[in-house]
Amino acid sequence: MKKLLGLVFLMLILISAIGITSSKPDTMHTIEGTWELQSFYNFDGQNIVDTLPTDVGYRQVKMYYNGKVMWSRTTAEDTKDADGNDVVGKFGYGTYKLTDTELIEIIEYGDEGMLTGEDSVRTFVFELWLEDDRYSQINTDGEGNRIFSENYIRID
Image (cartoon, rainbow, N blue to C red):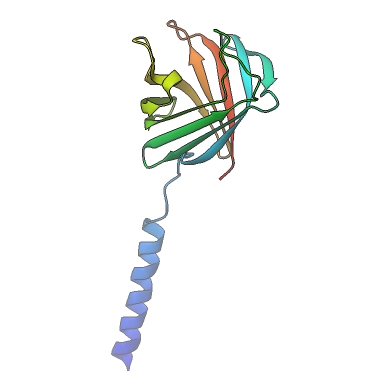
């Protein structure tokens, strides 16, 4: 009986020690999930100078899972692009990489407007501000000055 109690006591000590030494490390915010565009910021190079909400009828959603990104955008029926063509929606799919300060998206395929022309950009590098339920992807110029951002909230 003493041996059994000694064994149980030893097991409790081992389990306690494992619980103490294997505590979870601090986790970084994750971008995995589904996000909806809420607003845009304009910058003066570093600081926010204006906040613009999305237009009525405009909706953009991004999904990040397992290194893959997919986004879609729907606009009001009367929206026109710079050439006066109707723009109803766009989509793209690809991969993404995340660092402490950057979000890098590499678009593999998308709608015709997204991927036409020799100068079509397929790799996007953004400065990243990431919190639990919101993030901003910030466009910068060649010198690292902030220009504008898209601001998202987590919806799933």
